[in-house]
Length: 488
Image (cartoon, rainbow, N blue to C red; front, side, top):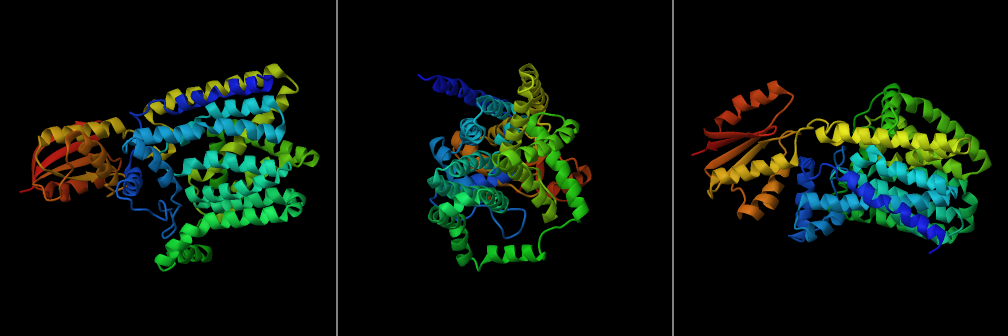
């Protein structure tokens, strides 16, 4: 075996390490909320009822949807593991962990530096932000492995492998299918990256045209078919958004402050470096990459990939959500690896100390946050909602019902979204106890999740829930209170 192959084999040991770090405290802490329930009911329709869909989850803008790729990819483990959300998530985490493999070859193609490539996969493996992203049972985290693939294909094309531009175009389409905003972000990232190497594009016009056709076709064919069936709903919504008649806008100053702050915080989460230190490091990275770009255009690619999303989000003037910055995961890791590699040229010892400190910092964040669901952005409003408690609640409901028919209602966050519980009763309750809730039953179980808005919740209990028949029994599991009510 060649030395290079032995080296790669050792590096691939980081894949199981990445996987194990990402399943820490699962399945007990798996977050399965209303949106997960909504998605899994759709996946269930695909697998069980063969009811296929052209669109995916809805975005924050009415009438605009993500693509359905997350549904169809999740349908594979759903079918294999009979709808178990935890095992579906394990499959997706494995998919996410394989980014280690892609990232190594991406960084080697970009920098031709094995030390830098090694640093990049170490940083990614232990990255607290990347670990948190992978645990989110939703569509946005798929941006990370797909963006790594896109960058890899683009660089292979730039280095003279012209046919790699075709899978780059297809990967661009897939990125938009998992997160609609990716169409916008990666259009600019890809365009400016290819502008730097426009000579390569002009030399391969036919391949560029084929790649463009594939990108457009796979990006829009399902949305076009959906629009034709639904009176051009998405087209009208996009038109309204561009005209400013829909969506929520903030001032340019507010956008500058909020987008930049979140960018710094996100870089901090991915790197494990405290935000105050990131504010010092980012200008150094920016200026270093600008300087190096005059010597070699490939460093300009990192600049584009890392900073273009920030500038675009500032100009959009929308309230920025944390997951909008998932696409900077790979360039953030690469840029930090570049900085550490530059330090290594002056002092190998110092660079190794920095790597060790970053690993320790990330592991500290992991140990201090994940057991309590702190700094987990997609669960920030309900950190104490645990999957194990949800399953225990279902067990206790069936034991109290003792074979009798029952119905249920739930107080959820976000409010009035029962899809999470509806799916769990189908997957867990039905499989274990042989039947599901019946809306016509005389017994109702009301599942009430603790809410920080106590006055709102107490008002709902007093004026709505208390009128649902006679209270017969009551028990509590974690932050969930369950009341058994006799309706008739």
